[in-house]
Image (tube, rainbow, N blue to C red; front, side, top):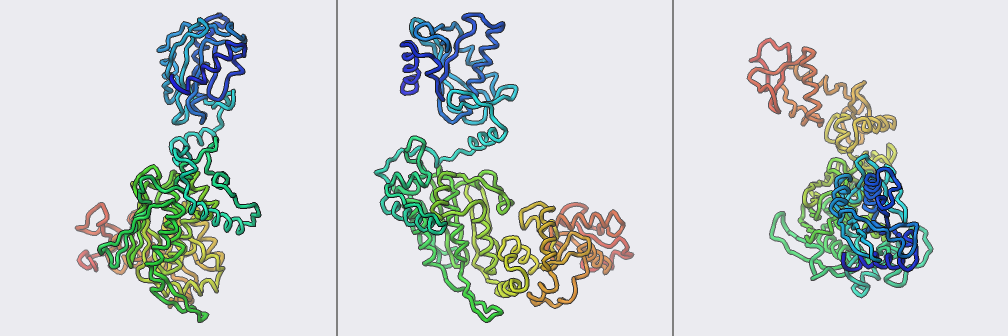
Length: 580
């Protein structure tokens, strides 16, 4: 109860004693309550009081105003010394009632004081850490002097934001004098370029405070945020922001470069460092129109987005540096912290993520250094796939590991893409979904809805709608009524496939039946690898064929698990089974 917190309470009590009303002294963090037991004007003074205190504690806890106080024993009707009507309640009793009747339990602190020769109780309500409500589910928050009921959207927002607090929105302990002049000038240049691109004719801020204000880097009292510190200040103790490991051969001894600089400077330094050590041509492709294009070891868009995401989405509460491991065959970026809230590795392309660092992310977007939503990830996928490489690989744990492979460039795929763009709508093959579908069918004869859903990270029904649309555009053909698709004759021609005059005749089920009737034994994993489909889908089909009397488990085969082998139910002689 000592210090600035209680000073606010003392000033209000002094003003009331001098003639002000209690109501006039209430605020977002202070309220007054008379004990109904003093006048016995209600039938159940205990119930009435506790219900009121619970509501006020919840109201303060759900607001974002910090520590608040409830003063019990003051009338909001009277003024001067007469306003102090006092209370004989037990501090422990009040604390217990509030604790037991709020969810999660709110642990208030209670202190008794004497003011104007009257005993009062001060209830200190701590800063809220989650969403609070009564045992009946009622919840409100303090807005000005009032408690306003929360809507469902507000409840969700409070619960989410408190479960995933933005560390970059907090007030920095450093001041304007710590801002790096070079970083500020670079930000002004970037902001000018961004404004010009958007047709914004407003002037560039002149002072550091004005610049931080325009970038959303100030608190409500115009103090610098941690995001401003990250962007524009030298890290404390010259702690490295980035560690770059350069290897001349895969897993060879690295040359290590540490970068300790404000984010806006470090980002440019690491991009230059990577670019200086990337081979700008690992393959050359001649397109059908005669134009030749050079394929770099790593596409610039993929590198740019991978690095930007590492800076924007890392956990800035962690002391670890971003680590970049660069070799001739792979570029791997380790970013401290897991994936942002609400994002799983299997839904990177389809989830509307909420950034871990909204304030920092907002500034980076205004400067043109970060993309909205998941567009940045899409650019990574598109640039890698369209340059004849596999999609980026992401692994998430305490760090997010993003890996770009230089590998062997599939020049035939790049040539085929150029022809597909000329034959069909070009934007199909500039999109991440179109490229994922094209890449799969370049390597496999059939694409099922299940596999497409996994590749595009959407539901099967959404995948079927997308594939049906590609069919209407002439790019794909559906195998009769099965949820299976193949390249159309024109698309197959672009890949130089031989059967360009007719759609492949067999569905997956028919292909399996053909193999079984030819006396072969099948394993679900082998079929999945052969056709490029999901193993689970093959297992379902094999069990279906067993139920319809077309297939059975082979003798001496395990009855369960990935090693099960299947044969035709009509095979007369087990010993004649091929490939078993």
